[in-house]
Length: 483
Image (cartoon, rainbow, N blue to C red; front, side, top):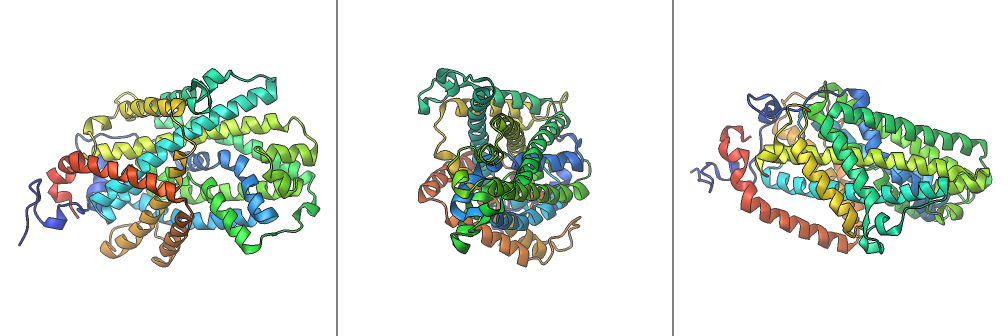
């Protein structure tokens, strides 16, 4: 016998905590009459640039040194291994984003495969991941801005306005400025944001090409011996660190609803951006270990600049690399904040958070109100809040999302095998299971303190869901959309 839910629906599990949105209702929602609608304004080139913009950031300018310390010259293999680990999840993102071309990324896919409660959990997880990531990136931008000023002009901003209270300052003004500037660009429109990102991606790739050319022109094979001083364990350990230099390509899927031809463009952009980033990472890593020894790279906070200085005698390299890092961080900040606004937009539109925040500006075609609120909150976070430990939550959040996206592909394969898919993951469920395995393994390497913070954030999210989200959910008022 059917049971009645607290909200008046019927069907127990069907309309309760684990109610699933039908794929048909998700796909139709952006075009429904009276619905809030984003502009479909970006193509495969802009989407690919979003993936590159969200991936190539401080990681490539810093993480090589950390990887070289663990693996030696074999850090090159660590980059390949990390890319392979990401590729399995990228295939799953490609299938789901092209089949369900709706904002929300892993949150939306989980709503269709594992139900509302799990969707809320991953959505709430992504709110933390993206928000803390943007704040941390902005703080990194402030540090690189000072480094650029110092290496180029011999001047730095005063500590009182360039450093958070955690480090003895009064507030990180550069971090606030970059967050608010990016917020303004995002409000203006997705086309304008994509164009700005495309320019920044072109600049940072030119800087990396400069490094690669100089590195191979001054390459010393003697630096490659011994190639793998710590053996396989060193390569794997470095891959676990380097993996996080690849995080960001998944932000492409948050722009599904604004792609002109999502069924074709999203798989192309996801896989192409990951492939391009991998090629650049491997070439830069090989050039770095050919220019300088692993010890030199590991002992520097700016390993690429150190490699050019020590290996090629280019003392002004620090200015070039600082400028490249500055542009790289700006584009990452833009892409990640874009992704967060689209995830929260979807959660608000579904009623799990206040629907009024999902209002789309008729002038700009963006969720302007939501974007401004997020931008201001993140600017305050970047200026004042200690971030040295909380940024580790970005890692667990991303890997958790990867697990659920891979699981969603498997579940939907069996629950709705006839639903049209523009792209299908080959050898499903084998490849998604491998993606889950890689993600779970990397999650197991995280510190227990990170898990405590993560569980605390999840507990707060569950309180909000049961106090507000469950009762206001779209599925409570649209039971016909339950799968």
